[in-house]
Figure 1 (cartoon, one colour):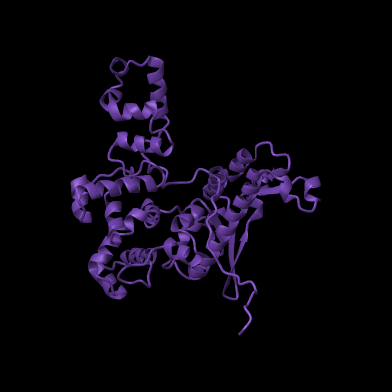
Figure 2: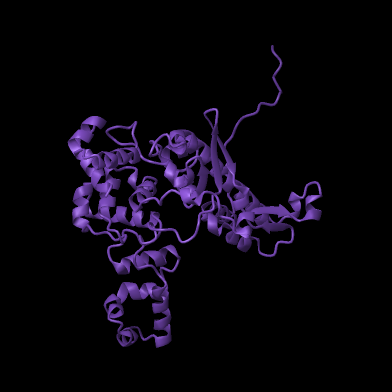
Length: 399
């Protein structure tokens, strides 16, 4: 009879450990905050912590912005930006990819939904209730808040809801007294609500601080030079990515604490979470830039006029993260490259359905060049092996 085997056997087991909500929100805020506001966000989060010092970006302190700013790439169009956001929206995953184009075509340049709900339902092949549910999901997902509102009142209400003020006096007035507000009839509102005029004026002032046209800041000239956070270069056909430290804030231990072995236990729990969050932000940006930079080497080295096919969903799958993490991490992030200073968002372009080896940006660039040479849609379609209607659609988008 064989003796029993009493040796320990290791077995992998998945465990879920809850993260305290304030710490989780801190990590998400540091990851998603725009680069220009990162220093201020870190300062607010640190407070008066005696063990950690915030070092602002040296480039910001010197005011040096001489990094080939004349070669800064143009801004991403509203259509491209919203396509990237909608492609990560969970509510759209069960629908055909054409649903995103349908939603984008229903949006006007102010960010308002211009297509009636009944017509939108027919185009999406959904019932009225399903379309209403989808619209609410999209409104809650896209940024800036207020997009896809069906009127000024809904646009402003969406912004209040995103700010956590859905039950405020301003939101109540939007839901109940829009005609009176449009006529600036404070007396009628006072008579109906019984509120003092000071309370009404305070609510109206809150409404005045909102943005009536949520899409107005998605395009147009920048009001300040960009500060690249990432540098992308190539050596022997391999991508090299580094952090542009002169443009990034850093956190460091106070000298006497840093000299101790095991200084980590001296820090408050929130401070440790902040350090991990900042490290996670920088690590995520580098990982994304490495993957996208390798895919877009020809574009970044100016061998192509437009980026090739590479989506945020594809990048997220390769990195093992959620697509929304990729989207929010690259939003507002700039990178230096052989091409100049480019938004990291420029490295993503969806593939064409009829030609997955071509990106939408590449096709539109080819169409624009062809039109300048006098070529008609039919000839361009033949050269690209595409349907004429596809070329005609993207030609209209190039205008």
